Image (cartoon, rainbow over all chains, first blue to last red; front, side):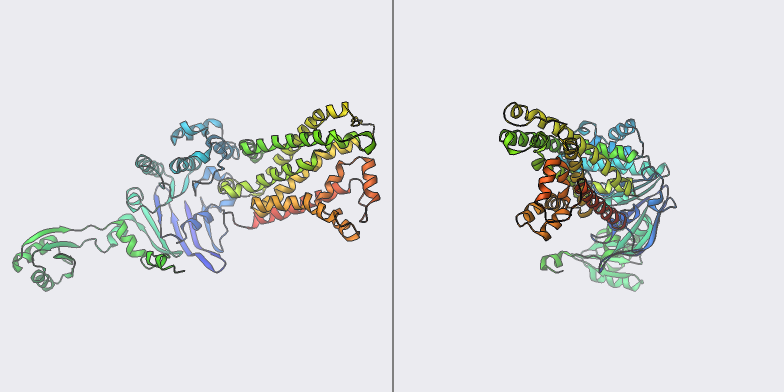
Amino acid sequence: MIEVEALTKRYGSTTAVDGLTFTARPGTVTGFLGPNGAGKSTTMRVVVGLERPTSGATRVAGRSYADLPAPLHAVGVMLDARSVHPGRTAYKHLLSMAQTHGIGKARVREVIAQTGLEPAAHRRAGTFSLGMGQRLGIAGALLGDPATLVLDEPVNGLDPDGVLWIRRLVRELAAEGRTVLLSSHLMHELALCADRVVIIGRGRLLVDASVQEVVARSERAGAVRVRTTDPEPLARELLAIGAQVSPQDAGVLQVRGATVDDVGTAARRAGVTVLELASESGSLEDAYLQLTGDAVEYRAADAAGGAR
Amino acid sequence: MRVLRAEWTKLTSVPAHLWLALGTVAAAATTAFGLGMFVDAADGRSGAWVVTSGFVLAQIGFVVLGGLVGTSEYVTGTARTTFTAVPRRLPVLAAQVLVTLVASLTTAVLALGASYLATTWARAAEAPPLDLAVPGTGRALAGFALAAAAYALLGLALGALLRHPAAAIVGGLMLTLVGDQMLATNPGRVTDTIRAFLPSAGSRLLQDDAAVASLDAARHGPDLGTWGGGAVVLAWVVLTLAAAAYRLRRHDVR
């Protein structure tokens, strides 16, 4: 269980996190989303005690992180795959972590096997690819067999096999009753593995809901898409039955407030030929882009103009 | 105790640390070998001076070793891993102090042994023998190890405080070596007083009684006694460590 309560974190005049409150519950995978600079990583660093909140509080398993008697057994953390001395081997890195909690070498070898790092265990971490560094970070998070996991961009840099592995791993961990908080930019991935999503923008909470609820909120969800040879008469028919119609490119109409059946019947009345007719389902990505549209700190156009 | 084992694993698992220790031993022995060749009885140099003369170069190795241990956590991002495992943080600094102490004392003893062997040939020629009966010889030999450990700890403390290796190492060398040399070019009451209170005063521990007497004869600054130099460098180490501990406790880790 991770509780974030009215968390605010400022760096000088910049507010990275602004009054954020949410809870990640046991047995669920909570996806943590937001544009770059929204405050995700800052929030995660505060949760694991690396940074102090300016105000507000965070608790893990009901305690503040620094008060946990054995943090590695309570929380597995992977904030950045590059949290390893490049001159140290993967095995020694994990061993030095294990030694702080009296965890044995057998467990170190176990997590190395579990994360598929065996062939690389005695190589210097500096020679690792991004994906292997990511696996090492996850091995470190699993080391203490924790009830809570905090993973920042765990699928970053992984190959398709690795992505699949992470997806199964976090589902398994949640199924065992653990709390998993993971951030990602890959919406499809989160839609597949998260139960709930917390979306933030500019340090503020935008949404805290289940994935289904968020998807249902997206603009396209429940709309009907129809393509005809002659959209105008059809649009008139549809408006007459009280639907909302928004014309799109190439003879396509997006219709709200009417079912596929309604639209098909209206097309017959209007005497137009239907080329395509389908109900649209929303996606997490759509919902996310709509929600964060106003909260994006850097836009492509700004970057091109050299703004900020 | 667990944190101590973890820090020992960290220190010994980075090959660069081992190479640095080995290089420090080699630098001490090579310098002693070279300087030993030019010593003859007429210089008034003692046997202890010949064996410990490698310190002038080796001290750089100790400052760098400490500086690396103090900063590598922050430079490599290992700090994120370390301080999520030990959120109380201060045990990590304490463990680093102990492992650096052990590593630097071991390296210093090895450097002394290597220097003794490297100057065998010089002693067979003109250089004076290492005679523990000469007053202050024991202190000079122990002083080599103590000053080495103190400089390594100063490097560590500066590293933990500043979190940047270049700043820590350059600062450490200014305090232990360069500053003293620069001030020595302009002897006087003010400069000698400053020199007496710089960490470089720790190198006084390496002098036997005769050398201390000749240093004191030329001194315009305060008289801190034979062990005073050691007390000065110890005070620097303690104060810098306290500042580093304060920063570690109060500030964020990135």
